[in-house]
Amino acid sequence: MARDIVADFLSHLTNVRRKGEDKTAFFPVSNLIIKLVEIMKREGYIKNYRLVDSSRGKIIEIELSEYFNEANAIKPRFPVEYSELEKYEKRYLPALNFGRLILSTSKGLITNREAKEQKIGGVLIAYVY
Picture 1 (cartoon, rainbow, N blue to C red):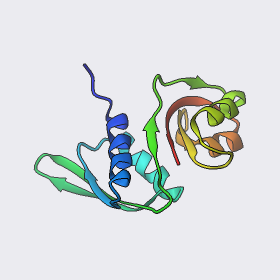
Picture 2 (cartoon, rainbow, N blue to C red):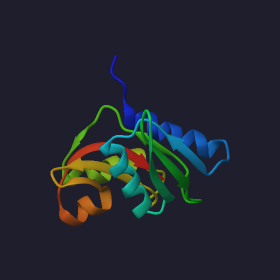
Picture 3 (spheres, rainbow, N blue to C red):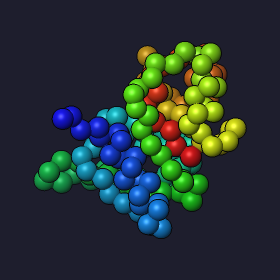
């Protein structure tokens, strides 16, 4: 059975928040995880992060922001057209303009807000709020 590293990572962050902690480390790290973290930092859900080399590979150390509540992977990975974004926002986000969907597009990983501005669709990867 294949491992879903995105789901593992986002569940890890949610569990850390539920324990009342702000700092954590995660292993293994892929380019997809790094891009997710960069988006979450840009959107204000992560205060800071750094990559650390270890003998087993890279480890990412993360400090969560007070604005981070929950994050989860979306499975199955739905292909979404630009016109359908609002439907999925209502399904996965708790309120209007609260939280972000993260999509994989031909232009890389972007948020639902950026997808609306650029009028492009993609494949739903995760949500965070």
